[in-house]
Length: 325
Image (tube, rainbow, N blue to C red; front, side, top):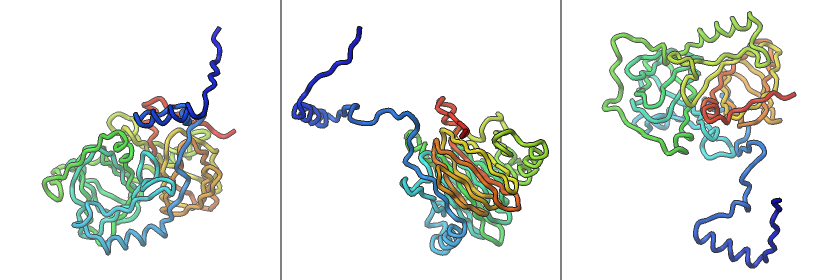
């Protein structure tokens, strides 16, 4: 019969042993928390108000030109992390002013653009011109050439979502500049695989609303890859949720990191016991395995866009979700 071993060592013997291990760059695992009974995260729930972000984006446009910055981007930083919104995903605010071009390049990181403000600038993805109107989702999958241009008379501002922290963690990052500032646009424009107009998503949500929604999760739809019907990109999934006036969702938590953008509406979300009051165009982050519920306390519908690293967690068989009883 196996028995637990109880060895009585003096503190002096142990400290001498630990000192020797440190000198050899070895760490005794029993001195650290190697296993947790549930996911532990350093990130905290946090909300960035559009009323604060927009003036800073406009100020950046006054101070920094496209010659000085490859991309004029403000990175939203979680108070408990270093320069990132969550451990695997960044959430940025990018601005392109009238007449400007954000130069063409490509990189290992996958990226999405959720358009916040503008009259119809565009992104060119692998030679295809993709229009950009408020609420539209535009994809630039990893290692695809892309440049942005604004031929309108008003600023173009959007939310960037990239898996850059994950790519860096895996030491898989590559970057390449295009030979010219912008790509040549193909004669026949066919941007459907990169472009998800808000008008189409709004219509689809209204159809789901008429059918009664999809159970406990409410009125929510996932953007699907037009080629394989999977997540829009291998490392990022995107959703849009419609909250009816007065609606409160159930509290859910998931083993993934999620960033939200308020396309329209006002209300609040309870994230891990912290109330985040949001309104049009705000951004907030929900850490992994943290209960989150949304409330629309107003008399107009609210639309919440979200993106997460759920495809990664599912591919690794780490994904789990549960509703609060």
